Length: 101
Image (cartoon, rainbow, N blue to C red; front, side, top):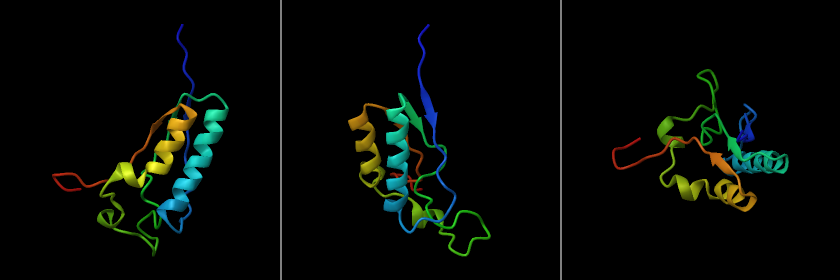
């Protein structure tokens, strides 16, 4: 039997001051999961929605304002942490491509 260890990480629903702050928390959780043997770390929520989740929140940003222009560059710190710890990571983001958002 081929068993794999998967970790699903739901970050805090609080508002973060920046995308960098949210990614720093994501890296901390990825490192913890990797240290406990995870081979795949899954973040189920959109990582670049860092402020104003929920329609009633006065800090709600539009999807276009939060969307990445170059998601690999903007998520680099998390992708690099996964590479260094030799784990796969699912990184859900809203981003622009050739067809728009």
